[in-house]
Image 1 (cartoon, rainbow, N blue to C red):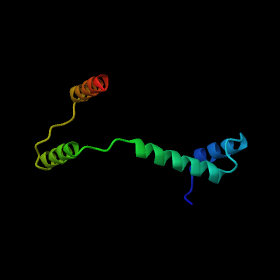
Image 2: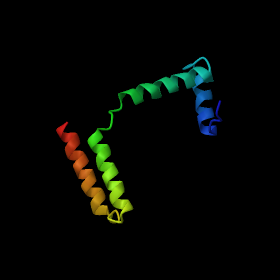
Image 3: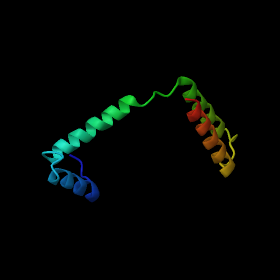
Length: 87
């Protein structure tokens, strides 16, 4: 098994001591199952989005990109909020 960070180890010990799980192994198994469930619920990335990413990477490789600005960040945030509101 991989080594856990001291914070994760402490959290597991507290969870077992509180009676949430019978052992650290049971807690880790539950965490892995939760991660698997969450991953299964994530939407797949549409092919057209992947194509757009590839096109952007090709442009950047060709020197056709510009530095990221705070205006770019604000525009992306605004588009994300609009998309969320329309869902």
